Length: 220
Image (cartoon, rainbow, N blue to C red; front, side):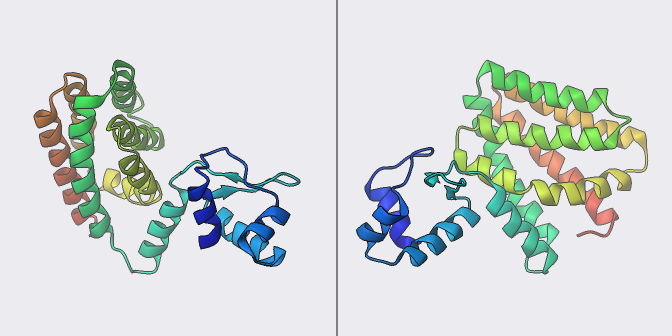
C-alpha cells in the first residue's frame, strides 16, 4: 500500500485520476501482480482509491466514511466514550463556527439558516429534526473552509444518530425542546451576521445543554 500511495504522491495524481494498469504497477513497483491487487483492495477499503469492474483504479475523493466507522467501532468496543466524543466535538465545533462566521458565503449562510428553520418547521417529527440538526452542523463545518474539520464533523454522524434521540427524549417538556431548536436559529443568524464571538458563545451553550441532557439520560 505504501508503494502505491507513494506512486500517487510522486506522480501528483489527484482525485479522479487513473492509476496505471496492474501490469504497469507490477513493473514500476517491482512486486507481483497479486501484491498489487491486494494493496489496491486494501486502499479501496480505506476509500483512498476507487475500484470499478473492468476499469483502472482511480484516486478517490476523501470522505468521512472510514473515520466514521472507526469512531463507531471505538464506541461499540468501549475504547471511546460518548463523553470523549462530546469533548472533541465541543473543541472542534467551537472553532468551525468561528471560522464559518468569517468565511461563509451568502449561499452557505442561507443553507445553515435553512436547516435551522427546518428544525422549527418539522418540530413534531423528531427524526426529521435530527437530520436537519446533523446537516446544520455539517454545513457549518464546510463553511469553515477547512476540509479536515468537515471530515471530522462528518465522521461524528453515526454517533450523533445514536445519541440524538436519547437527548431529545430526556428533554421531557416541549418548551425545552423548542429552546434547543431556537438556539440553532440564533446560531445560524450569528453566522449570517458575521459575528464569531456570538456564534462561539451560542455553540458553547448548545453543547452545555446537550451534555446536561445526556447526563440526565445517564448516557455520560
